[in-house]
Image 1 (cartoon, rainbow, N blue to C red):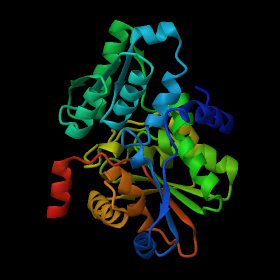
Image 2: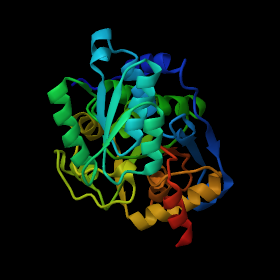
Image 3: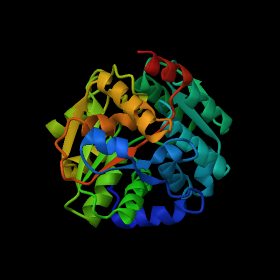
Length: 316
């Protein structure tokens, strides 16, 4: 697999623009106070699926030939990647099957079904669903859309950082949540091409540290997955995004799930928008870092929090 370049991101931007408007980049005094520095939020939670991954889905599916489209698509997801594939499949008239964990976020499951995808709930976590998905792809010949090892997905999601730096080119530190790593990989490719001085920092839950540990060890690893943040929840690591992160990511922070809960409440209160735990992870990381005098940007990757999750969050 060839890592995408800035040229690929620019091509993705042209493909995506007719279907997805740029997301807002906003500054909030409350977040300036919380982080101790000038803080901007890239609101990927304002996209039609409520998450950044739809950029990659549109970029990938728009390029598939007729024969591949006729085979249909299949993907494994805790929800946001699945919504991305379902949204793009509907946009381009392709059938889609999404395999998700049995206890997947019901908001995301319903959204995938509303977009026309067949949703198969199976297994305890993402990796169980992924293994079932891969077996179905082999058996039936579906076009398997991997959540990480897809150059077109990475180029597509990298457009969020291009939009961000186009609007605020002097960002010093960009903090990006990491699950499989496609979003952070795309951010690194763009940031380092446009302004190599911009530090890109990844953040993951300490209760699901596979990507972090792989980045530290410079090899693919598996780790236990117990996090509340489904957008960060994977036991395994993926070759292509890790290769990019090994080359370009400046730092990687682990935060506890309790820190994610606090950050999610703070993001919702400060931005007046719905934010899921993965989308709040950059704020949780920023609260740990010494950022005085730095111009900070946070990628708010998604806002697909369920009513049950929201109620629990504000009842504790």
